[in-house]
Length: 434
Image (cartoon, rainbow, N blue to C red; front, side, top):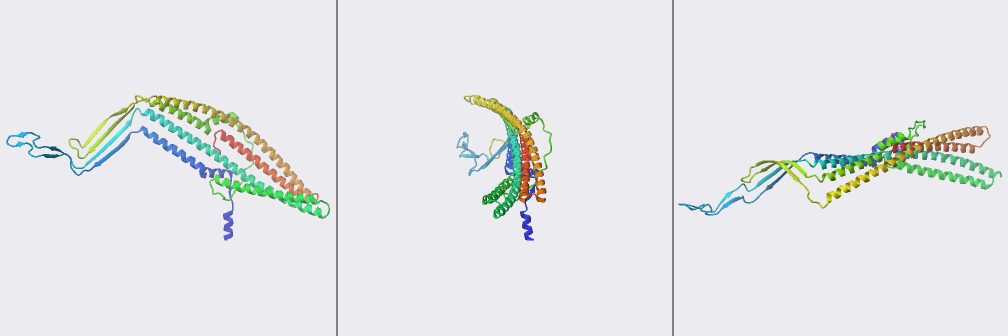
């Protein structure tokens, strides 16, 4: 029972391409970090929006002393009273409030002309959110394509191991045949040596395939959010079917609307536009309305509760060209953002057109690979029939088996190349991968 349990623990986890992409979307560490940055930008945007709303603040202070405050009236300060003399006859201290005082000020302030600057700052903040979302979309696409490449690498490495093992079996059979021929005098030792060399070469190819499979397995596990070294296996995707390919103009139109690069460039233009607006708003005087309540506990001749209201404002009369130069700087940034948007649109259009051409060629290559597989399969059938009839040797049949496996490997490579080309076209068009 313990042995069976260990065998179950070491059994690889089998994944389809869709399952692998789904796991990566949920667990990939880099993708999760980008999602946190999106949330950070959205929270910051809410903070900026709160600047539209009034601010309610309270300040309080408590002062204590060892003596009560008062008014000192010297002797005779109020004159002489007939029959009494100087008044007051002795120096007197008239208490004014207690020894301790508590003071509280509550204010409610609502910005008025600052709304112009707040509006532009809020626009900049929303542009930052759009930029972060474009980065998230780009990262999601990159992760999906990375998983697709890892998935394809796993399939190819698995098939390479099968081909290498078949080549070892073929070389071993030929070595045995050559050794028998040398002993019977029908072959030279050179041919036997060459057969052994082919065995060594086949074993070397198997070791390379094993190392490749291990490296890709580690990278694939990390991409889908699993610990490195997790035993994994992938299932082959269904065979390719003929697909209707939209025209390149359809993909270009989608890219101009949905490409993360274009969306980010457009958000940078929006951000620069609001930056210009913010610089212009700095010329407007700042005026705010306010109301307040003052409470004090000990001051004489001053009410305990006082309500006040009014307006407060400020204006910059001279800044030696600071605002003017800031506005010119923001205009330069806006012009640069517009030029960058034109450049990005041209780059994205070129990427879509190149990916569209690549996809058409990839499908043709997959068709050729499948045709070659059919010929290799027929050749293997003929070899098997010839060997069974006593007209061939097992080594030739084994070699035909290896050729058929290699042709199957080429089909897998070609079909994965087509799927990757399709994914790159979808990425260039700004569409999330299925």
